[in-house]
Amino acid sequence: MSVLIDGIGTLVTNDPEIGTGRLGIIEDAALVLGDGVVQWAGRSREVPQGAGTERFDAAGRAVLPGFVDSHGHLAFAGERGGEFAARMSGCTYSAGGIRTTVAATRSATDAELSATIARLTREALRSGTTTIECKSGYGLTIEDERRCLELAAAHTDEVTFLGGHVVAPEYGDRPTAYVELVCGAMLDACAPHARWIDVFCDRGAFDGDQTREILRAGVAAGLIPRLHANQLEHGPGAQIAVEFGAASADHLTHLTGADVDALAAGKTVATLLPAAEFSTRATYPDARRLIEAGVTVALAADCNPGSSYTTSMPFCIALAVRDMRMTPEEAVWSATAGGARALRRSDIGHLGAGAAADVILLDAPSHIHLSYRPGVPLVAAVWRRGELVWSRLP
Image (cartoon, rainbow, N blue to C red; front, side, top):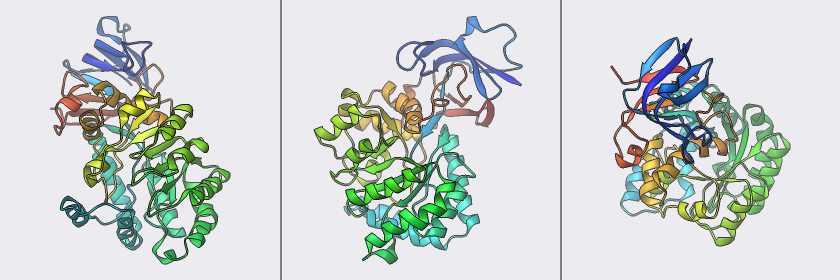
């Protein structure tokens, strides 16, 4: 079966070879999906004869690649609404709150954890996210980290071992012993269930030397590095990410000129998480500075129960435009193609021929409405691998 989506007002392909500008925009467009991939994209008047065994009329609406959310913490139990309310009353955010979720996650059953991951991935899908990354990091024991990864792998291919989230509570006065556990028996149990290794390199979590030790062990086990870096204060994380050739350095709220230069000279994607700043009343990262330096920027939701309890990439796009000085075009690219680069994927984040047929339909004539109409549920339909998996249209 193949599907012809025609009557598209504005088609964002992220392929400048077939459309205009960085977003590869085609007006009055059509798209042919088949065998799980994009078979053709172009103007409606040029649709190949006989294309599509089924037809879907977009009725002038905009069509985009599915959002690629490259940073998520979905394997957890419990919630921290009281902590959020306290922050809104003036308390500051710190990494220590993670331990509250650790206790709840350790007590949860596999069925409860799996249900949470499934609920959040469904929620993300309804707002247009067709690829989502999921980390461990709320178990912090060998068995709890392993089972969180195994459960996450049932919902996404992009699974990250984050035993280096914070020092486990029972190792509070023995951080060196905990790092040894992460690099040894915990990694041995978890590596078969993950693609990536991540470390929270920041105040209250892990310092530069500990971060390097964990990343080295992960790389030796065949995992690809990515990093939480420079969220709470300036530190070595951004430059360690470049040093290790990490796919992505995430947060990057506090950067020096040397950090920006290092990111610009390397291949590490800068993944910005504006919903975390929104939820903690922290300073937003300076996306404009990174973009003008030539750094590749991605946007992600950072869904977690403590500092960013949202799965909405449209919300993150609106925040990026309003508070991080990104243009609507830059924000959409970063939430699609940028996220794909942060996951080192060439099959998603664009709608060129041969790309995965991950497609979203907006109930709006243009991608600009994602930031122009913040808070409005504009995603009207979602195709994943060419199959219509969600729609709110009659």
